[in-house]
Amino acid sequence: MFSTVSKPSWRSKSGTALIIALAVLGIAYPFAVYFSRDFVSPHEFIAAALILLALRLIAATSEIARFWRAPLLIAGLSLLIASTLDSAFAVSAYPALMSLAAASVFGWSLYCPPSLIERIAVLTDGDLSPGGRLYCRKVTVIWFVWLVVNAAVAIALAIWGSLAAWTLWTGLISYLITGGLFAGEIAFRHLLKWHRTRS
Image 1 (cartoon, one colour):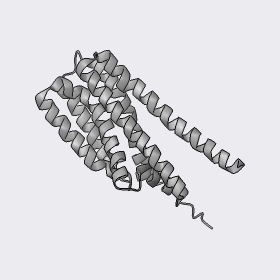
Image 2: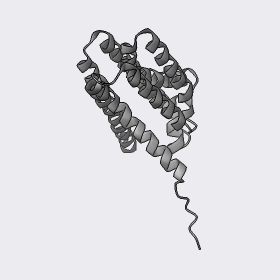
Image 3: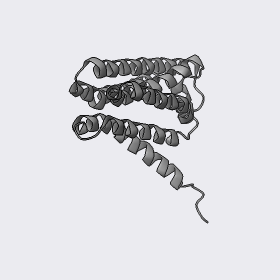
Image 4: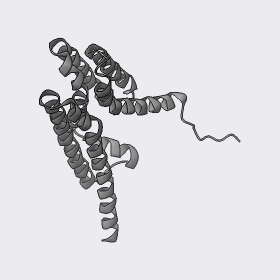
């Protein structure tokens, strides 16, 4: 008898590959600006950023990812407006706009619960207890605050800082902090579960 276990479709595989590729390109963007600024025009960088935004829209197919569509469209429109006012600033605006887009998704879910972290947790763990929902809301608040702070620092460096400082923050430091928050939350959650099982 043939196995009934379903294998991931080529569409799901290609969607995952696209998401990974976009994450890598997002990290690489600030370094591309820094090392290619002498022979790539600002409008070419802006076009590349708009293409990345368009690809993120295409990749936003899951139920949760669809919440990104409106923020991404607003980010693209903001980038176009910025390019007509100050193309040099618009080149540096992409990382901040992405952070603000993510913050708006987290913030919207706080205004219209369940929170984004709870929506994700329900997909893997099923229904949550009231304590679990409260915990997810607090984690969502932390991510919202961090993303706003990240965008504010990126904008401040784009306006008043050096290109090297902007590149270091948007291409390395912000991702290290994001990874630290992600890993720290996972470790704390497991520690909390362990403590509850022991008590």
